[in-house]
Every structure is written in C-alpha cells, then in structure tokens.
Amino acid sequence: MRGFCHIGVIRAIERLGIQVDEVVGTSMGAVVGALWAAGLDSQRIEAVATEISLKQYFRLNLLKFLVRGYRHASVYKGRAFHDLLRRWLPQPNFAALPRPFFCNALSLTRGASRFFGLPDADTVPVADAVYASACLPTIFEPIAIDGDHYVDGGMTEVLALRLAKARAADLVLAVDLTHRDPHVAVPFHASLPHILFQTYEVMGQALNEHNLHRYVDERTVLCKPKVSHLGLLDMPPVADVIRIGEQEAMEVLSTHPLVRYRCNPEVVAAIERQVPRPRDHVQLEVDPNACIHCGICAATCATQGFAAVPFGSVVRKLHNYECTRDQACERNCPTGAIRLANL
Image (cartoon, rainbow, N blue to C red):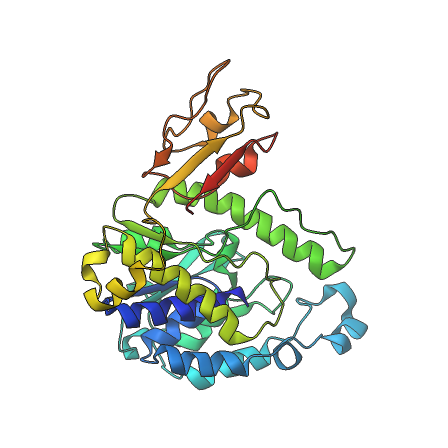
C-alpha cells in the first residue's frame, strides 16, 4: 500500500505543470502508472485507491489450503484485485491507452523479465499485464499469459530504470519506495506474512542498490518518499500516503536543476519557502569515534564519496551531487558510523 504515494507524485507533477511523455511502472507503480496512462488524473486515481481494502482484496484462500495444503499457489485470492483492474483498465491492448505505458513482470518459467508495452508484448490486455507486474509471489496467484506464468516485476527490478533508459528518455523522473532508515530496527514477529514481507523488502533494497548504481545518471531525477514506516499490507488512510508522495515530489522537482525550469514558476515560488535546501545532492557524514576505517564504504559507494584510508577522515565529498541515493554505504557500514542527509 506504500504505492499509493505514487498518486501524490502525480499530483505534484500536475500542480507543477510538468509534461510527461511516457509512463513506466513496476508492481503498485504499474497499477498507478497504468491508471494515469489511461487518462485518469490524480483525483480519480485516488478514488480507485480508496476502493482497495484489506478485507475485500486480501481474503485468505482457506478452502484451497484445507484441500491442497501447501501445494496451493498463494496465501490470498487475487481474483477480486484482478477484477478491479479489469474494471478500471478495460483496454484490450496497450495501443488503446492515451499515453504510452510500459511495465515489467518476472517469468517463472524463463527466469527473465518481460516488458509489457514493447512491440513483442503490446497486444496483452492492459489489466492482465498490470496484474502480472503487481502479483507478489505467494500472496496472489501467478497469472498465465501466452503460455507463461508471471509474478511481481519487483522481484528482480524494484525500480524499472532499465526499461526507462532503454526508451532513451531525455529526462527520467524516478520514484523509489525503498527508502528506509538503517539505524532503526524493524521489530520481529514470528508470523509467515512478516517474514515474507521483510525478506521481500530487504531483497528489494539489495537489488535496487545495484540498479541505482548502474542506471542513475545526469538525466535521472530521483524521488524517494519516506514510507518505510508503513507495512506492506498496512491500510493507512489513502490521503495520508498520497500526501507523503506529493510533499516529497514537490520539494524534489521544484529544486532539482534538471527539472525546475520545467515547472510553473508561480508554484515553485510558493514552494521555495518550505524547502531548506536544494534536493539534488546528498550530505555524507561519518562519526570518527565509531568509524573503524574498514574501507567497506569506499568499496560500496558507486560515486567515490569515500576514501579507503587507515586513519583520518574517509569522506571525499561532503556534498555528493553524483550520489545514487541507494543508501548502500549507510546500510552496509558495520558500525553504523555513516549518516546520509538531504535524501
């Protein structure tokens, strides 16, 4: 449900008057992105989001568990969620969408991603492709498309930057929901959903680290809404989650040099008073009393923000404008000596 903050990002884009040519999404980003590409504005997408509830869309497959046990494919039923997508996304193929849209899902038989919307996969019903992209394994039943079975594209690519780069975009506005404070421990619960979701989240962070290192460049504007306090199946008020995404996007888009000039100047002038500093760089801080000069930060950082030295300061750039914002240095520091600011 963290994906609801994508609606807030869309609302910020609408307020700032930024023109977006194509939409690429993964998982809940595919759900929200497809609705946007279908012509719905942020208000109407919010109306769709309010229809989703844990009670209606996350019903346990108790009967099938009783009959088939662990041979069954999922914990929850996916039919209601799939029916919702069919109702709001009735397009028989991707050409029927007003705006170009792409999403990715993982093939369980080939072990490779399929990118729906590209010429070899654009005749699939949009709702089926979006369900495939958002089908969290063991949570919803995998969907069969063209003789193959697909699950959530976020299992291999939490953020679909590879596809966005393949489209040769002049500018990519990327929304990354993997932000998490590595200094705050998540309480352990001895339950199947908790263990599964925590595993998915940690795995997603590790995968996204490599993804960001490889694809974030001078044409990428990265927005990281702070939603780590929300559990994957929590049901907070939709408006609250949307507000998180909107606030983060307004601050990032109105201050980043690559996109600021594309914004409505009157809106930017009003936003500036709420933003303490431009959000296009990351501040690197190291506690000298905690640092053991192990060199892991220097080996991990993709932008040479740290130096591997036996003594003294390890920070090369107090203000790192090239930082990919993957938080790998902070997360992998064995003593917790690193703190990143202005994320």
